[in-house]
Length: 454
Image 1: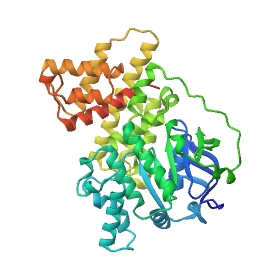
Image 2: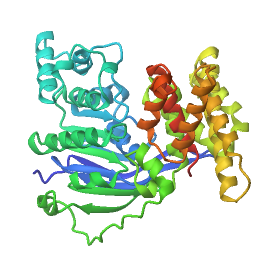
Image 3: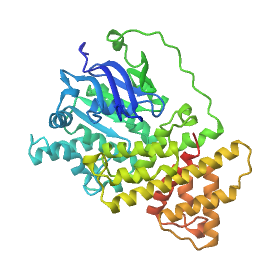
Image 4: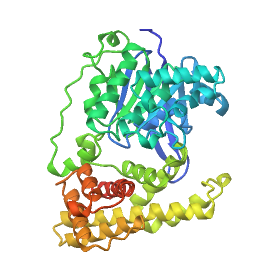
């Protein structure tokens, strides 16, 4: 393993709205080095700056102050075109949401990054893509579309795509956050294999303490600051020769209360500590992704900040969100046409409003105030049906749906069981909704449940 760092970060700050009253410092004076062939994990509670640090290294975050060297190249000094080319050739990225192009086959999704390099023929690109798909066990799905694959299969395809240009650095942002435990273990094993056998440098962001065993080193972040670095001696003792030895104490694993089981079962990427103190930025990101799926990361991040503001200040301030969506790009807005701006605004506003309602119900319950549970269930049910223009006229189906909503909120059933009940025909004791609609309804419902916890 080389003694020269692959990545060197010096005095890195990431600041939003610099010099304004709402200035936010997402990262504060980060200094670290990462060596070739390391498996690194950025770990900490949601909102601590892990993803911001990852995106800074990727060159996707441009509000940076300080220096990020990859090899001898300083990302802070690169122009947009230089950065784009550097990113394309040196890095591969894996996201929680896969970001496969729905209209392209699996094969063409994997091939796509190679096309822009213009360094190989069509036949060579196809062969490399098929070799990768074969290696990761999804070659038989090469002619299918992404929505025909399971979540675990889609993430394998995303890994193939990240390797298409044979980068030395793989950046993974919560890559197993949407997967079940079995698929999650498989994907983590594949990333470990890439590190061990192909000597790829891996930088992974995660909430899940179970993943820490894969890392050579773990960087712990809190409130935008790097507070601790630990060497995982079990994984690779060679790292001890490259970094300063630190005395560490075993991390105490907090007890998981019954109230937290709901979040831990739904969002397996959350640590129990994070689930118990779920921060506003995490909730805001989930709402934004739900409403804006398919947009660029930069666009989503910009709107997420406005959603955070709504969660903090209340829905009465929502007009500012609409103005931001509608405002011209040159004036600092998103530049959407009025119809698109109105649609996104109404969607986000309705989700935030419903979450604020559930938060109020939860707070009232904690203060031992009388809360009408049946009324809350009906409110949630009607919101979900209205959100997707659905109507259920069968009284028995409505009763079954209300019961499933109640059981889900009380953690009697998990998300999978809820979807099963809603999808099952009425004659078999279910609600009998269309399967594609079940997924949408369930996803929105999980956001509402998430909103009940702070």
